[in-house]
Image 1 (cartoon, rainbow, N blue to C red):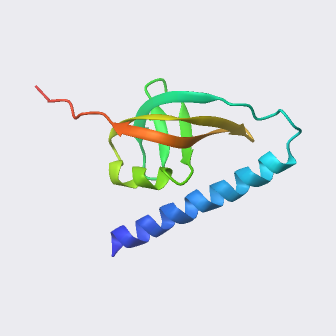
Image 2: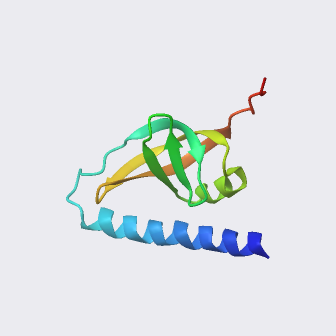
Length: 105
C-alpha cells in the first residue's frame, strides 16, 4: 500500500513538474531553450532529485523519470536535456543506467 501511494505521488510530481515547465517554455522568447544535453551522475532521492558528488541538484522530469523510483538511494548515470527555470535545474531524462553496487571492505 505504501509503495502504491509513493508511486502515485511520484507520478503526480512528474506531471506537475512537466506542466509547469511547459508553461515556462511556451512563455519564453524563441531561442531561450536550446539543446543542453548532459550526462549527470548522482544519487536518486525519494523526490526524484539527482544529487551529484559536488552537491548539485537536478529534478528528474519526463516520461522516463518515473523509472527512477525503483532506484532510490542508488547511483545512476543519466543522459538528458537540462532546463533551468526559476533558479532550479531540471533534467529531462532520455536514458539512464544504474551504477553497479560497490563492495564494502
